[in-house]
Length: 178
Image (cartoon, rainbow, N blue to C red; front, side, top):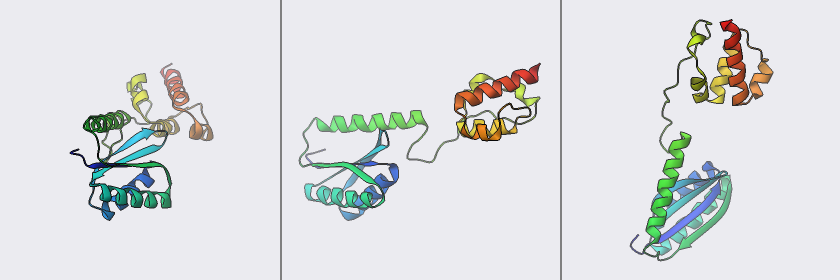
């Protein structure tokens, strides 16, 4: 980091972090190191540059973020120590790994290779439990609504959990098989 300042602010929610980062980058000559999903809705924004620019950027970023959400904390470290760069890089890598595991990232969502499910009873024989587990809850709800002979009511399907939907779909499949 070559003894540059490191600034960070943490918001509750992505929208507040996005607005804060935008305002911070527009207000001063700073570089965005990254935006990391910390967990429990917390999003951390990391900035670097000279000390005065980072202070101004963090203040304006926090101000903009508070207009649309909540700023949990903020900090500016004036001249960073030598070992701090590895900690920041590790945090950035950890955030990228967590985002790829969850299927979310800064780029548009990539399409998963999800099996195509149709409503015809003959096509249901191709469904296995592993395929159902890869589907999102909204996709499982769509499948459950379209399946003939589904034991769940539409209102129950609307609020059903993933495991309940998988169980209902597999039992419908078992009944259809017999």
